[in-house]
Image (tube, rainbow, N blue to C red; front, side, top):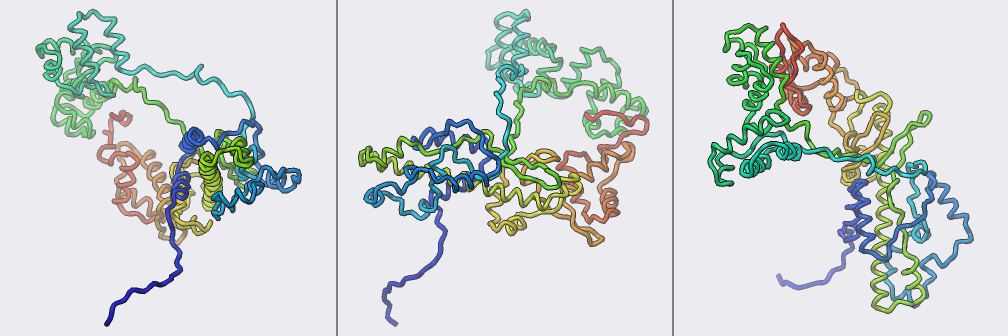
Length: 500
């Protein structure tokens, strides 16, 4: 059998990840704030792209704008690309089908907003946030201020600064006395003396090396000298953590009532002295979509309040049209123009996709919007993908880092997609989020002396025709940060003890 080479033509479709497609995918999964940052970066590097200075708020009804464009016969042909000379068109890369399909009127327009409904706000002057935004004082700053007001010599002040610098966010010392002494070149005894002075700073118990030392310092400062309280803190912190009152009573030889009273005194102490000085900034969520109920219908509106209005610079457009630019500069302008047009088109496509996905989610979760978490329906990505005829990966990207403002609160779009749990009575399945909410309500309503075990919760849910395994209840409880029944139990003599 002879081997030979042959040429064969074959027609096949293949998806190629071009740079433009990669950019569109990236824009699709960005949040509102990230998208604005990306647009600002593009405005800095692309001179052809600019932000419109028009302050007119566009109508939230996109059909009005489309009709006005169709009815406006006085629109100059100078604002459209075909006005370029035919010889110029032959030299430019506008034969690309993706570019030819673009509606050029939208891009030459002074205010090329998407035709989708947008959330509009009243036009009013923005407040000066600098007048009422402030930064809280951190723990180390608070201790340094006290150090400056205290009577320390230069050596002690240096040692104290090193101790303060080694505190964690909760106020505990994370370096050993030996390490600090080696760092400053002095004896551990001198570091210990300075440490004891700092531990009396406000908040009391700061710079402790462990929880036991922290609580003992606070007890000494407050004058708590009950032998039982001292013994529990010194020897039985593990039993206190597990709420094992029987073990504490047996180990100390005291009654449950005496142990409960001692525990109340301990729970009044602060296990994390640095907690009041936490300087973590609050992260505010900017919703990408608003869902409002108007009459008996839910209306979806995109939030584009801070979205820049993009347009093509008329200066560079005229430079190409009138042949002012040099050949090398013309190639540069055409390349940047193509990039700007693709960015605008990708942003508009992103907004349309988010709008379609949210509309579909609202249609499936209307009962949740009306009645709350108990009526959230199970939903998967494929259901929405089939509804709007898109791929599941597109739905996944759209729902990433996107938040929607609804009558029930602000939720991430992924919140509406949850696993389903079957029912024994043959009715519709229930969403896992709804089951979690039911478990939380059951535990909140339980008697502290007789908390529900995971098995009892399974039996209670079974009475409501919900099939669920005990290990699933344990998993949901752990995800919600709820302790097991053995650690939630309280002695019958006192059912109002606080959590440590």
